[in-house]
Picture (cartoon, rainbow, N blue to C red):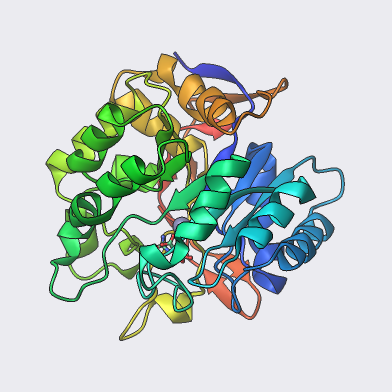
Length: 343
Ligand code: NCD
Ligand code: ZN
């Protein structure tokens, strides 16, 4: 197969940032995806409906002329998020979900949740208003090995949460382990998961290939090969609980190539092409459309897109860098080929 026409996909987990960074990255996503769930981890975080609507307006204003793209906004859950805020978010019609970051887990998560119990009133309101909860599923306890943080999160928090709020729709974001795959597969229907392209294509060796590779550092961190294989197996399984979320997370070169580099891999420049590579490697290109274009929309109870994109099997070299405000952005595969291209 060297041409693949798909219903236009959506990205169910994306970091767009703000200002010059937003303007730099948004065209890549808008070229490929019809909609994206936009993460709220700005500085300061997007914790109120008013802030989310203002951010939405800035995204729409930054769109290239003629682009058709719908940002689906999220609120950043804190210890202090009130049930009224959830009701207001739902009533706005533009807020699709609420994002949980454990305090200190990742980029701009300082205002995240310190104890899930503190959010039970908000989670109850979300269950009542049918507002999905998107979870960064990692514990932050310094005593837990960084490669085990997702597995321990399931054992310590997620197993209990799905029982306590059985109607709450939960997306276990950017899953990276066999344990997460098994948990989601066996969990009740209200639980789904997003999967990134980089976790399908890379295992943790990529962080240390001939030296330390800051552009392969993200959270949750890349895992060993058996986990990559399990996550790929889930993505190509045709199970609608698993769908596309790039977690494209741009940081300027200076913030990545330094003594204490930020977590995040930038993939929006090849946001669907990289998935085509992974699905082709698994011999499952026929499963890409469900994963990329149908299952997420169905989970969010939004209509499937009606237009299409065509991918061609034609290698192209990724630029070594993109402009990024007063810095540069180093994309995944910088200076190297991607096997599929947008027609
Ligand atoms: C994300 C970011 O940079 O905002 N980084 C990442 O490594 N994925 C935050 C996140 O989703 O954890
Ligand atoms: Zn993310």
